[in-house]
Length: 469
Image (cartoon, rainbow, N blue to C red; front, side, top):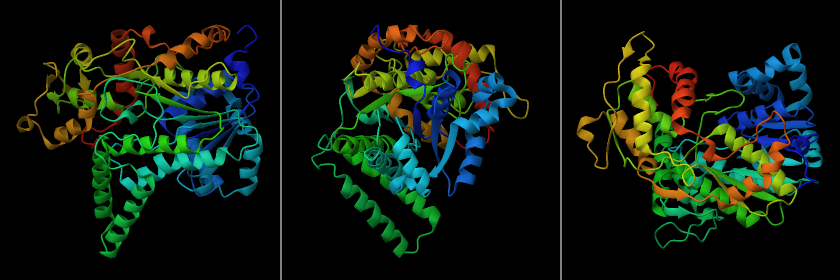
């Protein structure tokens, strides 16, 4: 370990390709890389757009225009745009397409020659996505990334960001093991990804033959995805298609230097680039939102259920550390869980208590200036009582049940081993923090002083009370 460079030294001079840069984790990863190592050679960011001009425009609107980058902008001042233009290339494309949808052949060939690291974070995270869309992005996106990576001349590491919930409705200690196509969650029918693709095509053909309108097609394909997920033992289309993506990776990877990182429920930044930044609503935040605006009084769940949450900057730190560890031969493991349930559990009861204490002290003021006063804790019950709930809450409860009643704990022996290996490396990076130990989190302090205030500022206050979640 004495000869191992720091994380910053590892990144220096590298050319990195990131998919999903407009997403939550992708943005935080890009920001950290540019902030801690300005001497990166180049950062290629795949942006879903028909051409490079629109890709660049979307990049500045959806990524660099966000408050997340305020620390980096303050650092560079008037030179920020020049710095970004020099280091970042917007690549027009789409992971769901062959060759990642990259039409610029010169850029495509240049990337094949230059790339050192590929970070694949692109995904549709909508649990109730239509099946054809989720399959194209989450499953076939993995196929296209591997196909692309195999043609790269000097690739050091390919990092695939998955989700710990590819385990389905598992119970007990869930190990950091690869997924294979012959691993079924329930039932006797073997999961055949080619068959699933064919079923999608057949369903779409049938709908179009009957001249079904687009709205109805969307609805049918959403229901179809959920039905297929349930048949094979997964609770929603998102985790089902992500699981199939992993299966494809395992079948295709060959000798590629590959790692699969499975974070649990990702929530706001704990420290970097500043505490409490979040975009949109993470899983538990749906509960927070409906509790503070008074639409949710009770929730189907088990109070002792562990809500495995982890700050997004901790996930990004792990991604960087794991990339170096695999590249330098410091770790041989393929799959890593990044979560908190084993080493520092946070329960549904903890969330209920923290919400009550925070929002009685700091009541929510809606868009019309009305103060919504919280008078009771959210009631947790293992029994469904839809008589007292409106349709929105019933839908939310169905969405949350796989988490509010989850009976698994994610083992993180591989992640802990990597923590031990990289501990000294992290200490070499001076003022930049690369920590990812969940035991360091004080959940009450984090929720009360970081997450809830950040959620109110960046997500809840920007969402109209009348908007649909």
